[in-house]
Image 1 (cartoon, rainbow, N blue to C red):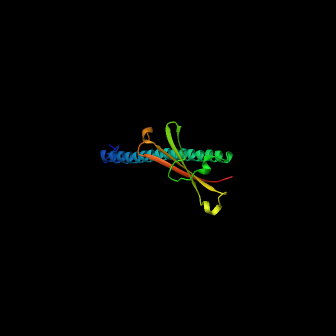
Image 2: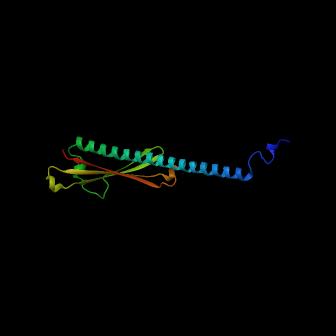
Image 3: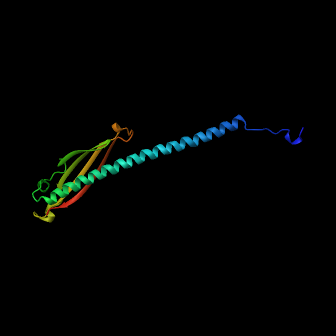
Length: 149
C-alpha cells in the first residue's frame, strides 16, 4: 500500500457538482434574457426607423406636389386638428396608418402673399397582431416647413 494514497479522494462530491451546475445555469439563463431583450429592442428600432422613413416620404411627396402645382390645395388649408390626407402603407408584415396635417405658421409676420405652411405627418401602427408582443401601438411624428412660391 502506498502511504500517500491514504485519505485522498478521487472526483467531486455531489454538493460541488450541484453548485457548479447551478452557477452554469444562472449564467446561461442570464445570457438568454439579455439576448431576448436585445432582439426585441432591435426589432422595435427597425420598426421605428421604418415608420420614420414612411413619415418623411409622405411629407416629401406632399411638398413636391405643392411646389410643382401653384394652385395646390395645401396653400388654402389651415387646420391642425383635421387631417389633410390619410393613407395606409403596407411594408410586410407591418401596416402603417399615415395622417398628414397642414397649418399656417404665423401668417401675420410674413404678409398675405408670403405664407409659411407646417406639414406634419403622424404614422401609427400596431405591432401586436404581427407577432411582436409587448410593444403595443407605435407612433412617429415628423414635421416640415414649406414656403409658398
